[in-house]
Image 1: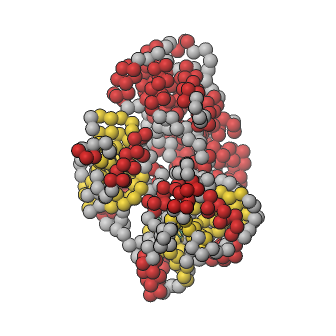
Image 2: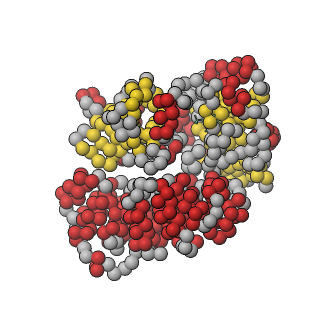
Image 3: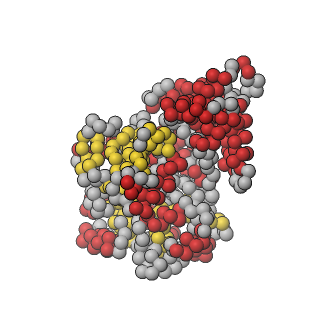
Length: 553
Ligand code: AMP
């Protein structure tokens, strides 16, 4: 399919902020595509060249695009002046290329497929001459593109497409295009985690196909989410037939086994198998089934005391690409299994939690301090639950999970089968969208961070405050290193930052405020921790802020 056709759709999508209009535009476009184009088009519409589980990143920085534009014959001041003005290299590329070329000059027509696969090639290049090769690929693409196309190619390469086609809109568009129900699309998506695949199934096999999507080894799923309960009493009532478990403070881990092969995925669908060779070995030896899909919480353990360490420490292992064995020794882990979704040929999603736990107990050979079944009690009474809760907190864990033993497993949903109870007052998970350089001793660090909440309606990120406390010197340095590659624009001392990093923030008070776009401001926001496990789409919403403000949460 010609890339121009997709660009027309991009333009239409950019012209509206309304969810329903976006849904209609996408549905109308995808409904007549053949299955092959459909997959690529859906990924390009989402600006998603790789699935989270593919362990590949495009990884192109602004610098390389700027170099490419200079190679195309534009001068450094020309590029920089435009960039300073808009902060969007896509717009810069469009504007400059338009100045130079007439559309009549384009002989070859770019296809969507070419754009997709060329950008994928960028990620595979490593080693010495990889920068030059990457530059060549980018040049090749920009050279064969019309001005408008260069805008979207550039944005796609930089992963800044920002068309607001969020998951909910894509789900509704697929449902509308192929005349199937949203629920079936969502069900299939939670297991497939790829709208390209799901749209293909909807087109070829309709609702039956979607309903029959199954768990597959080697592919992550959207895990079941929990709801926050007001207190233990409410949680016990809501859970109906309660089992109470320790809420371990670590990283949710989806463990999959197929004979000798193990996969580990996070709740953000990232494949972290390579980073945890110690866990892989434990899984190989101590899961007593040929095939299995299990869930557990991995926590970091202090080598000396055997006690849990803060999540922040464990998170150092999640993105580590070198010295993996060394850090595995420095920060040993313990996995606490709490669910079982598949054993051998049997899929257990529809079984009750009680039955799933029984299966889990059958196939886990526990290893003291390392490979454990989540500690659980079963009672409807408040007294023993309170004692268990206290014990969880005293042992350094976060709180408890109260689960309904009769409930099935619902991928991707917060359905009331699982409640969390933890003591802290409402903290917020916010996105860093800006920062300021420090002064004096901190002159080389980013010392103040602009925080935003998510407007679920529009997908926009709205500022809610500025945070400069709660960080140690080491954390300031670390944060600076993480944010530097994400800097979009720099005006005087203030930077705008590509929204990628979610942090958990405590605060003294939530106030109404005209100073920030969200309409609210946080008094004395303070860093609790970075949420490596949360994506921007999972950050807190304006809706929740409003509820907290009204005292409804
Ligand atoms: P939160 O991240 O605060 O929304 O709490 C939910 C998270 O608690 C889950 O995603 C798990 O990572 C974690 N967790 C810790 N212990 C358990 C447990 N026993 N059962 C289920 N989830 C748990």
